Length: 76
Ligand SMILES: [Zn+2]
Image (cartoon, rainbow, N blue to C red; front, top):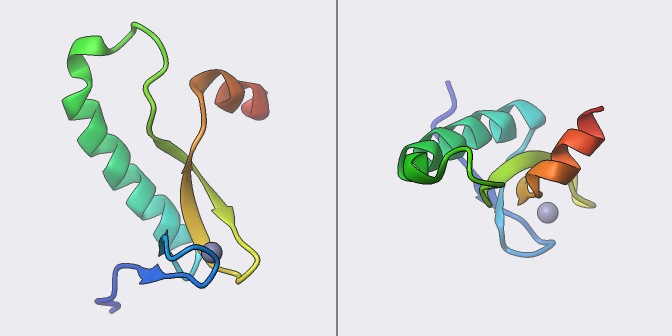
């Protein structure tokens, strides 16, 4: 059982994860937290938050923010 939750990465010093699953897990936690904070503005436009994971050049995974519109565009 892993106890280390995240790492820093050589690409930027940002929070990084060793695999996609860990990144997506953290992404879910970040979204749940922000959803609670943003409830009063829900439905009134894109909420700026991490909503995507990507693999960087060091083979680490990061969370990134992307507008809701471009997120939906990418999923279509
Ligand atoms: Zn990186």
